[in-house]
Amino acid sequence: DQQVKQNSPSLSVQEGRISILNCDYTNSMFDYFLWYKKYPAEGPTFLISISSIKDKNEDGRFTVFLNKSAKHLSLHIVPSQPGDSAVYFCAAYFGGSGMRFGAGTRLTVKP
Amino acid sequence: DGGITQSPKYLFRKEGQNVTLSCEQNLNHDAMYWYRQDPGQGLRLIYYSQIVNDFQKGDIAEGYSVSREKKESFPLTVTSAQKNPTAFYLCASSSQVGGYEQYFGPGTRLTVT
Image 1 (cartoon, rainbow over the protein chains, first blue to last red):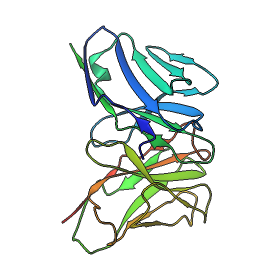
Image 2 (image 1 turned 30 degrees about the horizontal axis):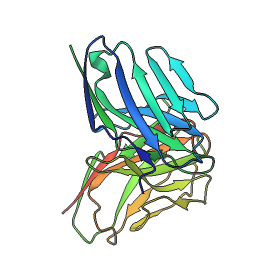
Image 3 (image 1 turned 135 degrees about the vertical axis):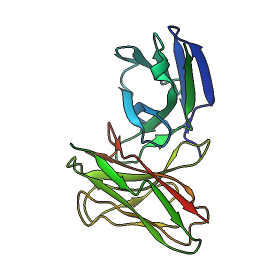
Image 4 (image 1 turned 90 degrees about the vertical axis):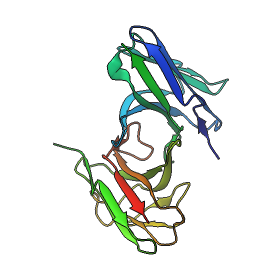
């Protein structure tokens, strides 16, 4: 049962433009959401997070938006840079549980 | 430097053999986790541990076993009962259960033939 879904396996954008990565979840008990960035054959690295009591969190070029009624969150990267090319995982959890991850979206930023 | 160590990076085993993957952290984190990643899929939770001598099954625990005898160590044994053991295995830790942020090791790619 996939509780966290990333329906776009890949995304390609031009350098300098906005990248928007989307994520949907089914478990209404999730109260914390995170985005991780991953390069091949490495462990994921934490990027940005958001609590369910907020609808937006910003950190430099990265902004995460949460729409609880739609059970949807998105990651915006502005402006996109070639170094942002990686696989991005959406993750969610609620207290005392392990984290659940989406399948990932491979972002390619073209120079 | 603080971090999580997984060794070896690549591991090869014959079918029918048990194999143990190492995970060590010096972050003084209480909680530790094991995930498995398969091509085209996200990370799936195998086991997690909140404190020493305690652990819980994740979503895909069948065919795996763990122990948590020390705070800094959380080894994962892939048993012969695991039907599809070939995968990329990731260990993570966090300062409390659930994380807010989980820190990941570099992973071990296990190939069973």
